[in-house]
Image 1 (cartoon, rainbow, N blue to C red):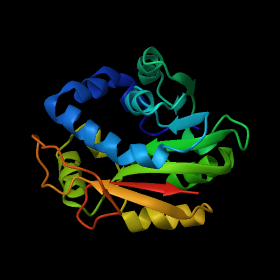
Image 2 (cartoon, rainbow, N blue to C red):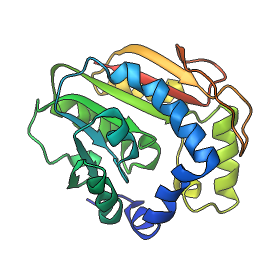
Image 3 (cartoon, rainbow, N blue to C red):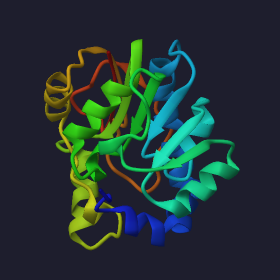
Image 4 (cartoon, rainbow, N blue to C red):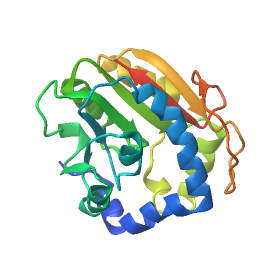
Length: 215
């Protein structure tokens, strides 16, 4: 089973990774990390990031293992100290109950089958482990902005199928998860020059980036 977007991220791995060094990329990355970090704290090692890409989030959050279908980004993740595995989230190459935490950041929107990916995340979590999701929200102003950029031909956003918070919560429930905590950020209007904004508890109605913890 091959991800429908693997070839894209394979071909444009360096371009994707370089975005994090742009002023906007650095600011958004910092806000997203601040949103995710408290939800991942307290999970036990080892931890896995599904859709690890070039390893920016895994390295910053101390996630030891990263999985991705695209080989080129995995090379960058390895250089950042992440133990990498090539594979797809819908068929994780790990035994059941291996990980204390599973991280999934802006990956469901690129998955071939996000429902199967969540089911696999649950399978590999040990009892007491937690799944932490971070997603751009489809019906937020940011989600609409990125969708418009995709419709205009942007390489990455044209392939994304963003979800609403309600969509994500329904899929989590179907996979056997219950949401235990939420945080959100990016209430400011969409812009190429974002300003620092604190993350807040809860899935804010106007937030562009929402993080959910589920067990």
